[in-house]
Image 1 (cartoon, rainbow, N blue to C red):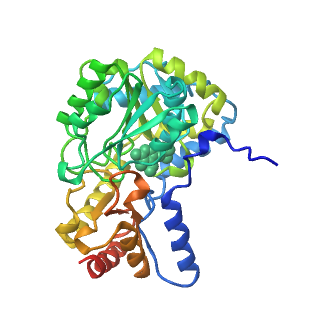
Image 2: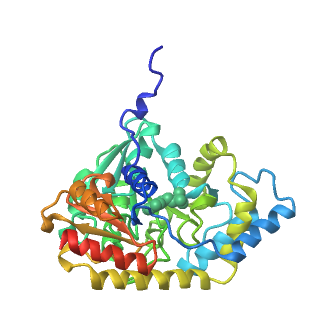
Amino acid sequence: MKDFTSSALEHIGFSGIRAVFDKANQLESEGKKVVHLELGRLDFDTPRHIKDAAKKALDEGLVHYTPNLGLPVFREAVKNHLQRQLGLNYSDKEIIATMGATQGALLAMGAFLDQGDEVIVPTPTFVSYLNAPRFFGGIPVPLEMKAGEGFQINLEELEKKITPRTKIMVIISPHNPTGTVLSRETLEGVADLARRHDFLVLSDEVYDQMVFEGEHVSISTLPGMWERAILANSFSKTYSMTGWRLGYIAAPQNLIGSMVRVHQYVVGSSTSFVQAAGAAALNQSQDCVREMASTLAERRKFLLNNISSKLVPVKPDGAFYFFLDVRPAGYTSQEAVNRLLDEGVATVPGPAFGAGGEGFIRLAYATTLEELEYAAEKIGKVLG
Ligand SMILES: Cc1ncc(COP(=O)(O)O)c(C=O)c1O
């Protein structure tokens, strides 16, 4: 039988994070202690009132398809949230409830890419963005961000990457894997280029509630950007709901109109009672978000005080990651990951996040202070 695999999958493998996770699990099954710093998911439970809202919706029979865009109550909640949080005025026809930000990003690629169109992706990056364009014949164009430049986007280098085929640029802030928060100045530079060269910006803001220093700026709020920005967000991180698969995209109606045409044939609509829970999450008290952020702030502070500063070339101001430079310890990324795993600490090699990742490892502080104390001691032992 011939190989039926689509050529679109030629460059698409499995995430490098999975490999570490599997290995760590194997060690655990052999009875070894492993501190899991490899996965980008929080160790908190979903807040009670959000679960209750889902149960109530189920009990009330909210078990059918919703409109493609999502439940009106969900879109209303997102609309009000974006207005409160960022001063952005989207209508409820300018929001789609998605199965996480991952699906939101896919909709943008599916709606706007023609064969051979280019998507500029600053790297290292959340790997989805280096793969998603390919499903639709698009070409990801990596733009390396450097520790020496604070992992900000180099605007001169960006301009060199722009061609007549550039359709979309992806930005993530706060950033995975570096923890960087893009500065207003950087975002203004990106916005200026997007307007002058006429491309769309897909703005991934899934860590927007986890900013410990500086400010979160949404590029959609910058002059002339509302019309060309697609804001993708998620409940996964903010409310510790990774398994619920809920997010949204917000964009002007002409862009949403194209994206919903893809959405209707990908999932139809996202899960009904999960949307109801999402509406409750946004409409009710945000104390749970503040509590999670303050726990994360404490962990971040602990790591900043207990990991040698030579390993931390850029202080991570947001999200819940450290991108450690292992070169001063004389290791490649993979060597450092292996050595740490031997000591019972699971991390991810930087190259799993694309170009610019070699020499770095990512750790997610999505675990208790007690576990982080153990990890910090081992990091000190292995990397100095
Ligand atoms: C930057 C970024 N975007 C999106 C996602 C995925 O979000 P979701 O669970 O909403 O699909 C992640 C997950 O780690 C992420 O780091």
